[in-house]
Image (cartoon, rainbow, N blue to C red):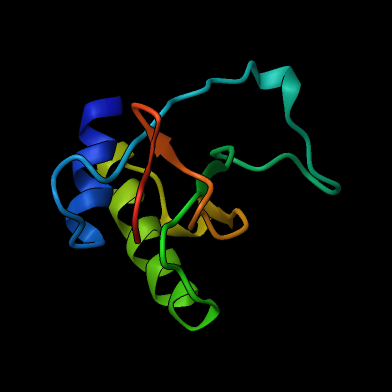
Length: 101
């Protein structure tokens, strides 16, 4: 599932090979709640750390990510929540070298 999600998100964002990374964290049913009735299916949260990201492109990226994740896992896109981290430029290093973006 993790590799499928990485490929689907990378394809949706037209990312170069090796520039999109996915880690998968599963939560037990009892470790998530919302106010109101329990959601079914439960939501999927995607945290996005992007190099060279700007606020105007986030909505476009969020829709592409939501559609890619939903298609991969077979859930509705409305249940995919994208959370954008602060910009990664100057904060991401691979092998001790700063990633450019």
